[in-house]
Length: 272
Image 1 (cartoon, rainbow, N blue to C red):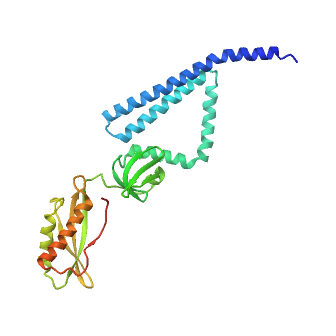
Image 2 (image 1 turned 45 degrees about the vertical axis):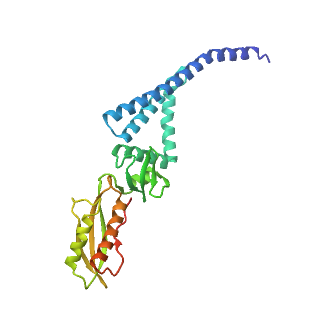
Image 3 (image 1 turned 90 degrees about the vertical axis):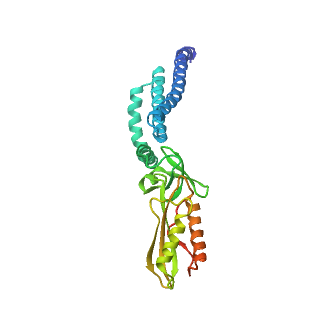
């Protein structure tokens, strides 16, 4: 069999195809370059006009992938690729893949919704999906937290979106409650006044909202008082002020001869 003619035809077709392939590769390379530039420009402009980091990230990523997809389609067209049929097939394949990768798809949608709704920002202190920490990163797939113990936790966006989210940074003022077991033989009114004045004098305790010392309940051996005070967590350490309040209550009780039969207790421990 004479292979000369088929081989020559193959060489001729390859010779005609190579320039198209080079053009397609150059087109796609330019698209990648423009996508990076366009994404940076979108992020910079969004930061100026919107001022929200998460929204800027979302818009820049959408812009980047939009340019890449358009560049890919143009590049495929350069090599006489059936783009229309490819797009139609991509829709069918996408439906099939979507069923197979439901969790990934749901995490992506949840990530987009989180970036749009913005229940928290990067740097916020939050409790999400049962974990507490500072938000390090928000992507379309997961949310990264740095816990109070310094550990990195990567949470799927679906879990974050589906469960209650507590944003500790949304409002700066936080209330703390300390329970004090007062001996039954003590002058309750006097003890409450002494503790109130002592707590108000601790650095970091806010004057407004006002500090309160209230009788809470009658225990088996003590009359329980609840001391409630507020701290601006942006200017002072929450646990630092709490520690100072506990030490002050203990010191003033010893100074004034007030009987505290049982240790001072914290009703609710919150983030540092």
